[in-house]
Length: 256
Ligand code: MF3
Ligand code: CO
Image (tube, rainbow, N blue to C red; front, top):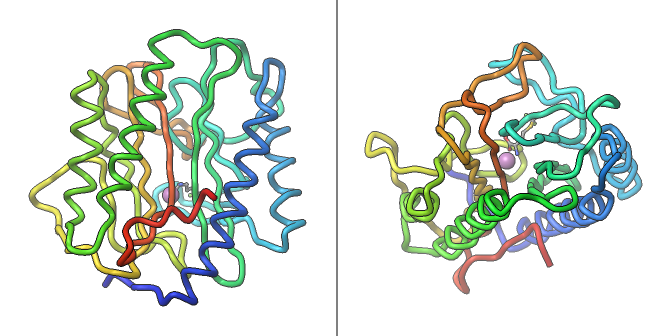
C-alpha cells in the first residue's frame, strides 16, 4: 500500500527535507583534499542533533547486512556506489568523487537526500558522469505528477543514463518515504515490466535516487556487509531527492 500524505504532513516532511538540504550543503562546502570522511560524519551529526532531529541512518537495521548501520552518513568514494562508511582513514584526494547521503527524522517524518561532488579538479569523464546522473534525477522529478505512472519516472532515468553511455545499478532502488524511511513503492531506476506500475496520486512522496556507473552496472557488497562497489572498479555517482506529488506538480522537499 502506498501511503499518501495530507498537506499538514507534507509541511512536516518539508522541514525534514530542508534540514537534510542544509546538512548536505554544509558538507559539500567542507569537501576538500585532505579531509577525512569521518570529519564529514562528525559535522553532520552535530548539525542534525542541534536541529532537534534524529539521524535516520544511524541504527537502521538491514536484513541484508544482518546488523545496524553505525553512522549518520553514507560516504561513497569513487567506485563505491552507496553505503560507504565514514572513516578516519578515508582521506579525500584530488580527483576523487564522493557521494554524501543522509537522512533525518524530525517530528515523526523522514527526509533523505544525496549529492555527489568532486574533490578539487576531476576528469572530464567524471564531470560528465555527475552531470548525467543529476540530469537524470531532474528529468525524473518532472514526471512526479498526478496521472503519470511510476514507470514514467523509472524510464526517464534509464533513458537519459543509457543514452549517454553510462549504466544503471539495479541492486539498489529509490523508495516511498514518510513516517518510515522506506515505504512503498520501490522506485527502480529502470523499467522491469514484471514490477508494478502504480498511477501517481496527490500526496505520494518518493525518494528518487539514481545510482549510475561509468562502466558495467554490476555491483558487489564488501566484507563490511554495507559498502556497495562496482564490480569492475569503475566510478559511480548518486543523487537523491524526496519529491511530493501535488496537484500543482512535483514539490522537491529536499531543497529550497
Ligand atoms: N539513501 C539510502 C536509502 O534510502 C541510504 C540508506 S542507508 C541506511 O536507502 F543506513 F539507512 F541503510
Ligand atoms: Co533513499
